[in-house]
Length: 167
Image 1 (cartoon, rainbow, N blue to C red):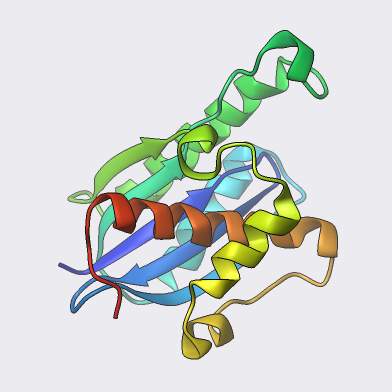
Image 2: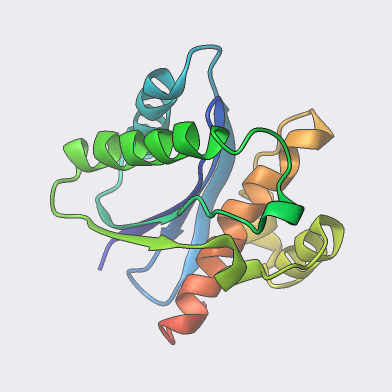
């Protein structure tokens, strides 16, 4: 089947996880990509990271920006528009290199609900095999590490919903 890319998009950074789905499901690599430019630059950086893995991507799963109830909003709600544009640009950039890839979106509440970040990260880590944990490249800034774990968590949820066996 090839590889699946799962993405937690941002405007200046994105968590990315690459899964080998040729024989079961195994995390191949995960990282945070960043740029000082805007969403257009980020889309190119994400596509470059995927291309540097030298794999054929069959599927892309990206977290779809979600509007929250007014009382739960943090920051400017217009930021979601920019995030949605960034997510679209990321998908377009990756799919330009992998035109046969199937695209899926997933909302944050679908895969993580309202679980606090610390608990969510621990649950994600607990589901990985030791070699998979070693394939995760975390940024030094602890405040950005959750983006990488979110990309991994999106993949774990996706494959569980698809009833795909983990290696």
